[in-house]
Image 1 (cartoon, rainbow, N blue to C red):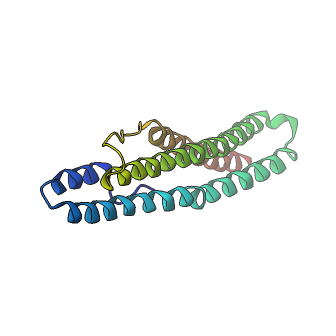
Image 2: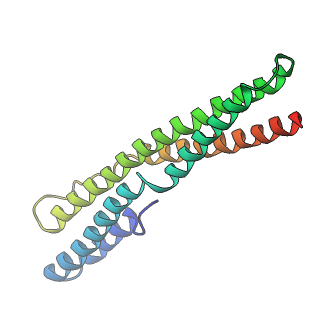
Length: 168
């Protein structure tokens, strides 16, 4: 989950504030950047919780379901067991990429919070404006991992449906 205020909006606001008197500029800019920072910290916490729990729960349940089903298959149903093992592998992939997503999301939000802290120091006159934009690498990796995790889960569920449909 991304922040409601973007870095571009903060930069634009900071630039617009240069024409206002110094105290108003500091107060308004500080509040905006502090809000951005607090939102980034909330998102950092949030990214460690909700949807990932659902993906991990469903994947773990899918693994248990498929493995318990596979132990009862006869040797003549090797096609079904191959489909079952592929779905188990995809469930594991879903769990692992979900973990990768959480790690990269945590890093991305930590970078956002650090950027906002540096921006606050600038607005307070403590440092020069050298708060560089952090790379979007972690944001991109998080989106990639999320996509792989969700699609692995969906594909696994479809394979289970196919496997159970063929067994009937």
